[in-house]
Image: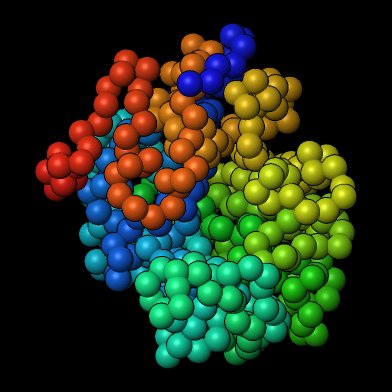
Length: 390
């Protein structure tokens, strides 16, 4: 276990109120893809419920990225929120989290080009803002004879005539999330996925009203938010953005201008929060000072800011203490430390994340991290029994 210096972390534990929402602390759990949903249907199970329930002491849990449609899927064993089976599976999760005193939002996701025809309806090419072949490989598991990883293909341009259908997919997913018992939703507009592919000028080469200047490239994001706001009130909706770097090699040539424009476009919608990923080893690409971009986005948005990006407890506390953020979301640190708020309050110690077990598999590296009081979750033969009881 690693340790951090003991410090006064009181700002993390001042209750946060935004609109009608109240959070017990400002230690949020970031969305983390773990590839542990049902193999063929993408339905969460009791195992997922146990994982989230262990972390219910977070001020807010933001679920792993959850595809809004079959078209939106890009990875094997990721969950969906676009049919009744998904609703039933996610309800197991939300009820367990609520019974443990927690709050959980569903992150709505469409990967766009970061997919492969094996996941697409009719095995067609994935969609993007413009024709785009991402760098790297698609994680297809055993869905492809050459898997589990194969080269990405060139995505086709999403036609303007298809955008109303896409907006309806987001709206329906938002409705399913409400039916599944989530406390709200976060719209995933980050990390080089579909909405971000529209935002970034390295991908978006359109000549219609969704391309060109930054104010046009953020139009789809704004329309998606408006579609979701037909289902949820503003103080039940967050948006996630990442100004630097992205999957598949995407980037923006002027991220400060582009993402400040995006934050400004969201500022009048009454949203609960803006969730911004600062540059980190997972996403970094670009020469500008990413922290300064995040601060400019906060000013443009004018509301609650959640900041993310390989924060240490000390660093995150400084962001809150200085007023530069209202909450901090932790990813890998929360994965490895189910009782992270308590550990932060005590100044550690902190478990190390098991990188070899991040994606796919079963309980190992997922629900077997010990808490401070050394509670070892029943795992191996007992996991199935417990999962079924949740």
